[in-house]
Image 1 (tube, helix red, strand yellow):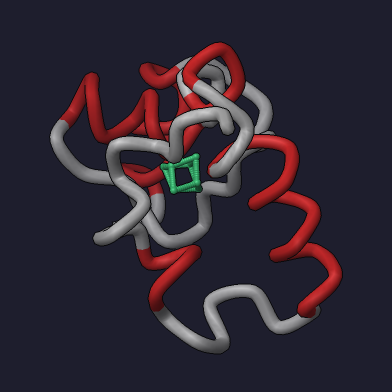
Image 2 (image 1 turned 180 degrees about the vertical axis):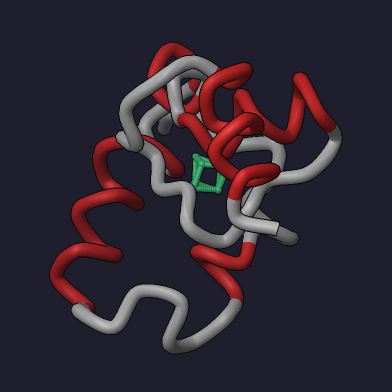
Length: 79
Ligand code: SF4
């Protein structure tokens, strides 16, 4: 069985009900990233943001486009 993401127990996408309003979308991300082995969860933008910047803005999803630098810029522009 593939390993779960190392953030699985704390990630809001998994643990906050309502983080993604559409249950089908959440299941899709879990299957494609969170529980799909390290080759896949290591590509998740939420995982990469946390590794790079030690936090991840709520608007970021596993397949949010852009680099971690670009996502941080977007977050700072919105503050
Ligand atoms: S793969 Fe991404 S969305 Fe899933 S638990 Fe890890 S950091 Fe969160």
